[in-house]
Length: 247
Picture 1 (tube, rainbow, N blue to C red):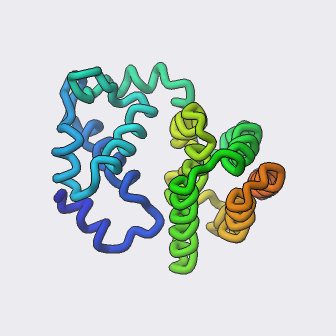
Picture 2 (spheres, rainbow, N blue to C red):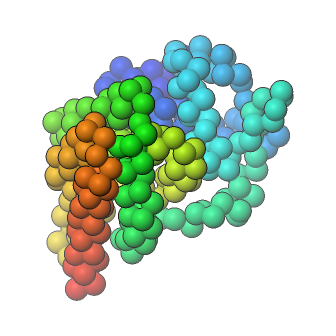
């Protein structure tokens, strides 16, 4: 198993899923030219042995790289690395920056329309296995917050599992596409006093309300809970933007 990833796994890493750890590790290897354009990645089985995870975890990690335009699957041949610069040029969300408050607001406005519907469909269509995955993601968010870590990756995973539960593959594909703008590279700050703040101190509680509506199969309640959740985030970031403009 890769030593760096093994350390992350052993040290807890409660705010980061194995899927994101592996995709991030492979992304770094592409960025540092361990794998260059045209190279074939190791097979799912080989990567599973390398990281000591199941092929399902590897497949999901590769899916993230595909959504970022870094690799492509060729039927019967395997997964091949693409030119990172060319991939960025043609990626429709290549210019997203979660470090800029204004762009976080733009993305949240778009996510509202998309994820409110996603929650409603998930409540109506989710399978037992998909519900279990949402519950697991919710638990990881809670563990991270209890440890006073901000669960960026786990938060994304919670929303992603809801998208999967719509039974419409375009929902998780779209969410994976905009992932770079959902998971920030650093905490946003209130510029005038330099205090680092968390985007939503009530995250786990709001997720719990969404989750309960999905468990109950109540589409209307799920949509309302997701709307409250995302509109609350919009309000917080708009306040942050106003504060930053006072400087």
